Length: 81
Image 1: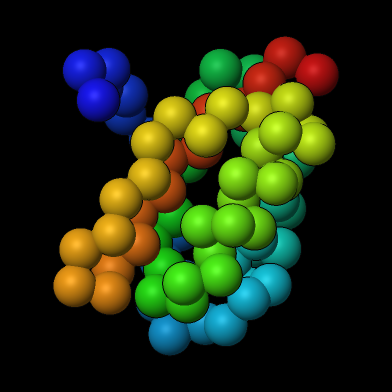
Image 2: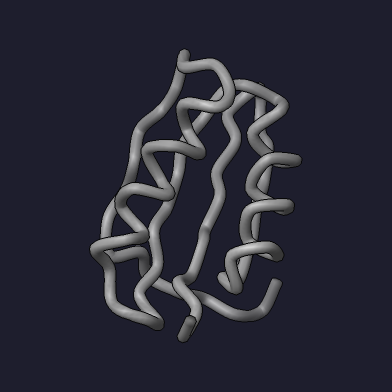
């Protein structure tokens, strides 16, 4: 992906099972300003699916996600709503 964004914060949720990464990220998003981004590090494969659904339903942007050797990195940008 050509776009590069810097996350306001990184949330390290490695070793935590779903839905914990999403719950923690959602709580952080509530106090962030629109346009700010958060990076989430996780290891549970269900995290990708959860964040795709959450971003779409909450009006946020799933900027990017990747998985390398079991480490999932998600960049989520808070929407205007």
